[in-house]
Amino acid sequence: MLSRRFFLKSAGVAAASFGAVPSFLLRTAYAQNPAGASGKDRPILIAIFQRGAADGISMVVPFGDPNYAVLRPQIGIPSPQQGSAETALDLDGFFGLHPALGSLKPIYDSGHLAMVHAVGSPDNSRSHFDAQDYMESGAPGNKSISDGWLNRYMQADPRAKGTSPFRAIALSSNMPRSLLGVAPALAMTKIQDFDVRGNGRGGSSGDLYAAFESMWHNETFDAIKMLKDANPTRFQPENGAVYPNQPFSQSLQQIAQIIKADVGLEVAFADLSGWDTHANQGAATGQLSQRLREFGDGISALYRDLGDRMRNVVVLTMTEFGRAMKQNGSGGTDHGHASALFVAGGPIKGGKVYGKWPGLAQDKLFEGRDLALTTDFRDVFSEILTKHLHTADVSKIFPGYKPGQTLGIL
Image (cartoon, rainbow, N blue to C red; front, side, top):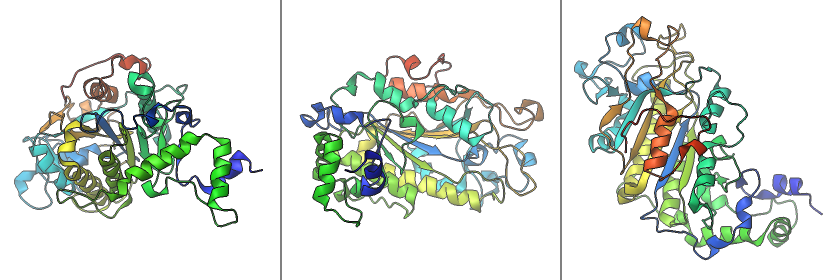
């Protein structure tokens, strides 16, 4: 007899993982109406985590602040007035996009991309592990919370019963903290790997199916069949979209394919690591710019690929904290406090940088070294939950949180 632990470890539920337990396997209503409402009418959220603390000051450059160039003489991004390929892309006369994010500028100009600056967690931890955990749990400073904010959204939403097993998907080898919890969620690295298959050590695929079926439920195989019948991989990029041949962009392409397959997706998650730029950060070129180009070009391709489907899609980016304002002796930046995030999609009132700018004068910096926080990340997340996903009570999503400012992003 195969033990459950051995089977799951070695026999290959290929890159498919579940939250605490595969609770969706106990649900059967989706078999009668797998996709629920038509994908044309269903609001969808795509959450993207920039792991490693992305430098919001370089992503959305405050070239209009007189202290900016003084604080960053080597790694600062020149103002648009200097008129070269290495200058910031003017957004509103005060803020500019990093030139490596140029592919996002048309979305901003069309009114469907916005940024929120000086945003982040009110907890002042500079630990990557703690800060990511607090943001994904939606409970800054509270280590007692076990599930993620997106999972609690799914638990609280009345549409939770009778929904598709593909309601929440992470394109990741592991379930992200944001989706951990009792509500159904799936993690997969590749759509085509969502299957049960042998590992070449004996035993037929039929034997493996029988072993897996005896341990769980037939609904697992209904889900596999459902995805195979929908065959998301047949959907090729549209509208001239070209996804970079990089893991992050390929994850976004697969999210677009799942959306087009109309299998009931409501929440998708992807992440991109490599933002911890302690050394050799660079300015318009260099280590950070390469990561920003991958980030921007991937989102731009997704936006173009989905076309008019973006009218019901919101893309939300986040990072655990920002970087220190002053460059360090290694040509990089150390862990900071507030950063910037991006929101894009048809419902977004874009073409604007939101949030109160705290200023970069020495007496305005947090602890004398970091961009000060003026917007709690939960204010942004809550607005998306209430106005896009129609959540009635965000207090169930963010324990202990009292709604603050309304930004008007949607």
